[in-house]
Length: 513
Image (cartoon, rainbow, N blue to C red):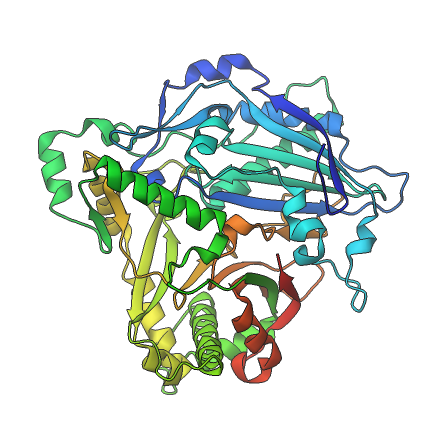
């Protein structure tokens, strides 16, 4: 079995629904909803939870108890199938229901303490084996891999000290942040209940809603509904007639992008290596950023996330300009600079009755706008934050409904393109801080994770990306940001943190994959 950064895979298991009858409750094929077409088929959501043992003799999270995954699959039986994307019309479905998910067992030959920061004693995802990627199962982003491999995988890694890491990967086509974290909370709840009495049947009090919204409409809209939907095209989306040749070119570009991670920004010069870090902001630092992002006359307001997003965007852009100047660039970029984020509508659509509570599939709407480079570099933070605030607040439930209907109405969904300028100057930010990483993640009773977050896998290394998450427990109740950018730009930001990161933030163990 392969060995990666002290981690060796010792067993491969296929897990099915504990109750095979649950498969009969699903339509086959299992249709995905129109908002599930927004995500790239090749991209997974990767998450790792680390549990520290108090003594080598105390082995946490016995593998045998992770048969709880089979019980969890009773509530997510579609995950046991395989993703199918019709080559003729792009229709996405889950087929081969019951094939099973992949569960890997792994051993790490050194204790968890080996990966602690020698100066601070803290754990950081970047210091774990393979920057965390050795703690999750492999992922093949090719067309063949997406169709062949399970859309959900899990890995149990035991360290030499008895500590454990549990990592999951799930196709972004099937869910977003809220769905992935809710899935793990449900697994943890089932695990805890089974640990109390393994003979007792376990059930979730609040099961997830797994049937995608408007799934039937993706293949069966009435002519009247289709005409109405096509009359309201969403911003930044286009639908082109895709020939076989063009489809092959698009697939090659997407595959090349995912294999190279964030080096996907297509340029004529060699793309720089992408690196990442965990950037922490305390409550006091967030307060200072929000104050700087508020107009001096207090005429408008911004949320803490909007203020932080504007701050990260502007800081990264200034560092990119400084790096470019050091490499001989005389003029700033002529093209406008893209800001890209996504907005989760599951709660708001649930409030309107369109979605059921605890909705698992995707309910996100992309939001992208641009500013001139000169504006982004020279204007005060509060002006940049005003733009970010206006862009995010302008998207409402009607826009989510219009986007879903427009995607459903497309005859050939292969031709759907999110036409936002995306290059080495773009910046993406994602809000995960509203979803709990730590709460409800206990597996063994009373043992909360000491670290949870995103591994730095190549496929998710984006040149100019910030994912804002809940801060780890035991520290100031601020936020943490998984931040990735081109390595030369990271050096600028790290070396001149007092200037480029003016309002705070601490760079933790940045490096490269």
